[in-house]
Image 1: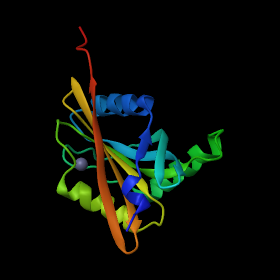
Image 2: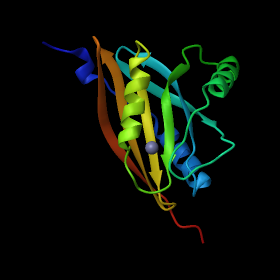
Image 3: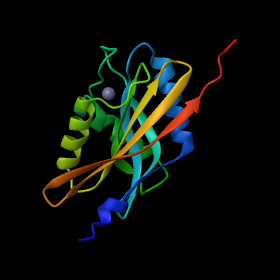
Image 4: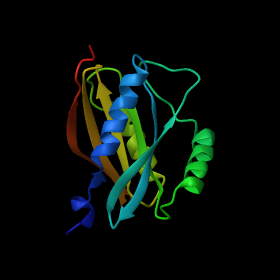
Length: 162
Ligand SMILES: [Zn+2]
């Protein structure tokens, strides 16, 4: 049986990766995160913008999204954007070390994807302040199962500031 979702991917622009890397570095030693904005192209998730959500209690080992605040900020963004296709397509957060998505992260991706019929993108941007690695995952429902596919990692090299 062919499953179209097996071929689905996250299409994320280099500009977004670079911007998330900068946000991750700025937030050190804490984690930060927010929403991914874009649209779906069939089963593919196209990411073209991002929203950072602040937190009153920054932590070094987790980042929780305040759903109420996220909804408010998202509505504001969608009112301001000139692209009518744009909508919420996933979430991102940072790791203040070169650590890949944790078991908890994967569970969170799965729970988010299980709660919606459309596929989602997830990005974990890990940085030690010099090098950054973007871990990109696609998650979507296939019948009553949730598929999570780790797509690729992109390393963003940073130059030391003098
Ligand atoms: Zn994480």
